[in-house]
Every structure is written in C-alpha cells, then in structure tokens.
Image 1: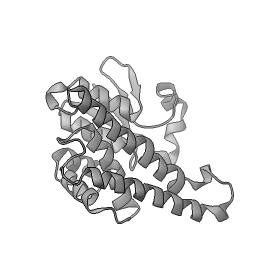
Image 2: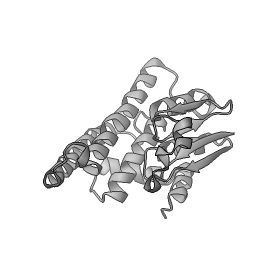
Image 3: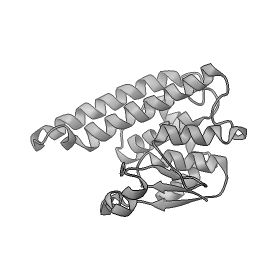
Length: 206
C-alpha cells in the first residue's frame, strides 16, 4: 500500500490533499519533528534527505520532493484530472506549483520561521521575520492577481492548488496574516473540498 510520511504544519499537507482527491487506499505515518524523528537512523535509511513528504509506493520505492510526488500522483491517475494534458496547461500548472513550493514556502520557512538559518545574532531575528513576512505577502499579491478571474490557479482544480493551500493554511491559520481577497477566497473554497476537510481532520483543525 502507498504510504505517506507526513509531519503536521508542513508541505506534506498538500500531498495528503492530493491522495484524498485520488481516493485510492493509502496510509499515513506521522513523523514527529518535535522529537526529531526525521533525523533518526530508521527514517534516514528510508529517506536520506531527512524531510517530508516522502512517498513509499506500492513497489517499495521511495519518492521525495513535493513537486515530484504531486506530478507523479497526477500522471498515474489521469482520470482524476489533477494535471492538464496540453503542454501549455502542464507548464502553467508546474509554474504555479513551483512558485508556491519553491518561493512562498521557502520564504516563510527560511526567513520567518527559521531566521537563525540566516543569522546567528538573535538581535537580527525580528528584522528577518519582518522581511520574510513582507516577501511572502508580496508573493501572495502576485497569486491574488492570478486568481482575479478564476476559482483555481489554472482554471480547474489541480495539484498547484494543493500546494497553494498549504501555504495559505500556514499564513492564515498559523501566522495569522491578512492575505489578499482572492487568496482568502481560494482558501475558503479549498476548505469546502472533501479532500481538504480530511486533511484538516488529520491536522486537528476544525
């Protein structure tokens, strides 16, 4: 059975949403970052990168990195239409996904949540957090413009929306930031999807 190695309040949320959208049997194994379980020899033997998400597939092989896992799940379940089939649609979906994962998520993680990765001086951490917040919100302004005339990032729901959802979830419900109107509307729309409701149950969010 497919197994998702997952940690709460991480990008693994988005992969869980995609698995729920697909609807095939899978199991979740929670990796507790507060106990540094991602650094244990057992976990690093399975995933030497020591991060989540990691997907153990039916044949026992392991796939890591959000974009790779999401794309593989979409392409191996074409009936779920989680990825367009035309070259332009594929490119635009991966463009939106990469911006959520590679830019927005990393800005929030490295600057806001982990300022110590940039400076060992605690006196500079508040300034770095403010820079991180400003950078993420500026990025969400770009997403807001993309969502101005549509419900989802590339028209229909796709793997890119699952990536954006976990960024929205963190920004709105963890950080408590006011996000642009179209981004907020997308977040509220996502919360109505059964797949996201299942994800929120796993997260322990009402």
